[in-house]
Image (cartoon, rainbow, N blue to C red; front, side, top):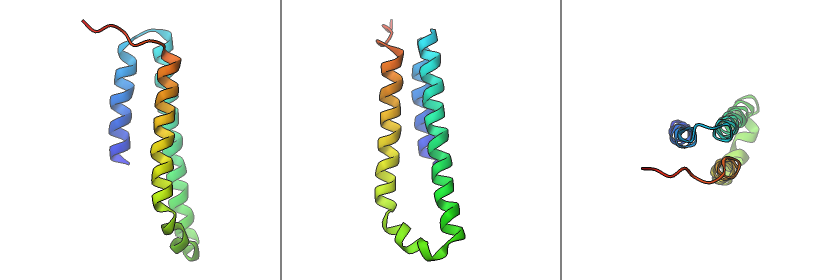
Length: 91
């Protein structure tokens, strides 16, 4: 989760560099996607804690959950970049 937060910070910082409205909207969208991912993962962990009989079968899904998490963040990043428009020219 710390790694995901660090990536989120880097992506959001890059999005904010182009300080126009679309960059702000893209930044909020990316932050919302990361927050949603964190809530989903926390809920998943809480359900495993409440229902220990599901823990073993849930553990077998861990690689799939990890891949889905990374894919979700990447898709949110691409959507945020698309919303932002072309990258600013760095000088």
